[in-house]
Length: 435
Ligand SMILES: NC(=O)c1ccc[n+]([C@@H]2O[C@H](COP(=O)([O-])OP(=O)(O)OC[C@H]3O[C@@H](n4cnc5c(N)ncnc54)[C@H](OP(=O)(O)O)[C@@H]3O)[C@@H](O)[C@H]2O)c1
Image 1 (cartoon, rainbow, N blue to C red):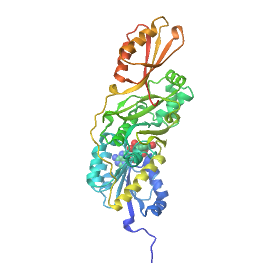
Image 2 (cartoon, rainbow, N blue to C red; image 1 turned 90 degrees about the vertical axis):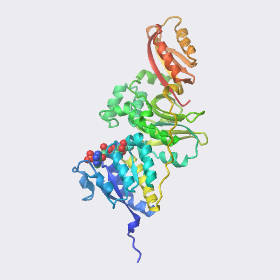
Image 3 (cartoon, rainbow, N blue to C red; image 1 turned 135 degrees about the vertical axis):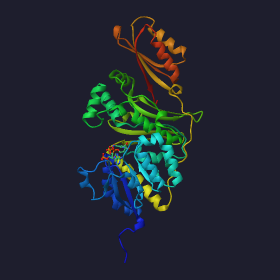
Image 4 (tube, helix red, strand yellow; image 1 turned 180 degrees about the vertical axis):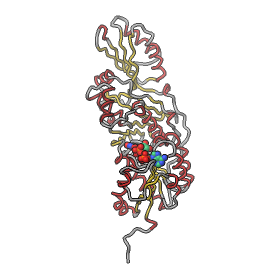
């Protein structure tokens, strides 16, 4: 007689660490999709244990009796559990739990950008030496499956640059400032009311969340050891309604970009997060509200863009489940994905990058102003691509877009502009990307 029941060797038992936004959605998705996954792969995924910090609450009703525990270490050590899904977040105890799981021969799937942007290279070395998977598709841009594309499909591609809108909160705020002419503080309050921003939005608006993701993107794109402290980071707190309106008039939108690029003449890489003026006809300019996108530029493939939901329980759980299926199949085949080596490549300081820049000044409306300002640009070898004046009299404002220039030269100009008596106020600089 033929049995429809999966044999013991076809069942992969999951230990899920964390039952929050992503963990709860993941468990729900596994339960929904288990039959389909089994039909397609021959593997039955079973949630065997779910670790949380505190028991209680409505969630015990969502899970079969006995599945919940507060002892995550016991889950990782349990010989009946085959694969660990880490959805706790943060550094401790997630890092230690992942390392223990790998050492116990269990593949791990994680969505933990904070941990990977700090000690990813070490954890990948442990997974490689233990011969089991450590997969992390959901750690950057939640539900957008671009990590696997970079790791696998684009493995042979000479990648020049990856640019991402990887933080939904800041993209929502900048969209409101652009489309509704909202002030920064009003747009932030609206984002908080709609649940797109935390009550403490610092990690998002100061760019730290995007910086962690930029470190991971650079690591995979260039096979480099990049950690979050290597990433130059500037948030959106200084972007004003005036910046947005100048950008709009000149044919740009302002976006918070995570940029990882490799120099054309060396293996040096530069990794940074900052607001940038993107031409309105660039694909990234059309990424609105809380959506995310990753734009990849390669010598052979040209340009590619991956677009979708960068956060949220279900989109993120979808990416986690894709990894879990891969890791389960690999486990049963006795193999694991090759993430590749991470070398120490020189990382360029932001002063040494080259870009185009927008600079604006409130100036005295008198003869010689333009001469004084262009003289400073000329002294530092920065050439001007576009200049315009708006307003007259006390409201006169000059705006310049430079040709590609070295950032240190532009910063020297900015310092000198502060000493000119014709400059009443410097509005700072915004980098221009994507021409
Ligand atoms: N939320 C998103 O949209 C999103 C998107 C992409 C990636 N991620 C990543 O996904 C991960 C999870 O995020 P989340 O939003 O689901 O977080 P969350 O809602 O705060 O959930 C965290 C879960 O971990 C549990 N937990 C915390 N410390 C624990 C410990 N020591 N032992 C056992 N369980 C512990 C918590 O238990 P209690 O419930 O008892 O407190 C909670 O269930 C993070 O790495 C995050 O960066 C999230």
